Image 1 (cartoon, one colour):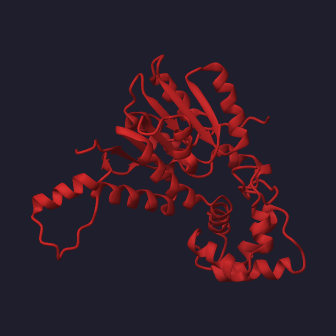
Image 2 (image 1 turned 120 degrees about the vertical axis):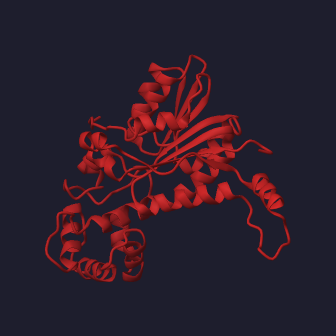
Image 3 (image 1 turned 60 degrees about the vertical axis):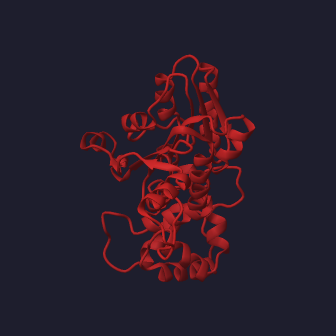
Length: 319
């Protein structure tokens, strides 16, 4: 198995946000290469427990090695959207003291050209986080019509020239199929007007394709709801996002979960009654605001510059 370096982002901030108890139960919903997991284990006592989840088969191989090293650790091959089901199977619902989700693509996935996530290294049009999944970037590019392609480029990539890119892809595939990341990136760049820029013109569309292939935004929404369901009272949820679409989902979910049930303004209630309803129906309490990487971390790991960490705590019943 090829080895690719991975530097966990916002490591100190995540450990601080999780507020780790020595004998607590924790979940790393995005194990990756285990950088965050190893630090969590280092903070746990002998009776602590950590469950790692990942849908990437390469990550699972690394996780199995860590399982052999540390009996407190268990790795599960599954997307983090199944977090709630995993906890049900392990009898951990309402017993989890902290959950970490490091959203998006990992450095090893980007750096391995054979995975097809990046156009920096030519490779197959794959982009699957779970190599056993049926949908790939190639199947999307080969089968989606202009309207479907334009939609994902516009919504998931926030690409201004989504329609032009979609039409260029469909025109080209009528004569010759796409098979490589470089080939697709060149066609996308050619369809976007203007001079070359420091940020490759295909960047937004490649992000959109990756999100579509892996159903990333739907996975995130399901995982957030599942996390709240399994957390113990005062359990912490830490989520790292890397672009505005992800962060918007996390920020909105945290805000709505902390505000509780909304009562129509026409209902005659006192401020005390409204506060009581909020406390009875809210599930999370926000811990601080958005946390960004320090200048020192960005200098050491440039990919951390777009990372945003948000932390929330499960409210006690009746709190």
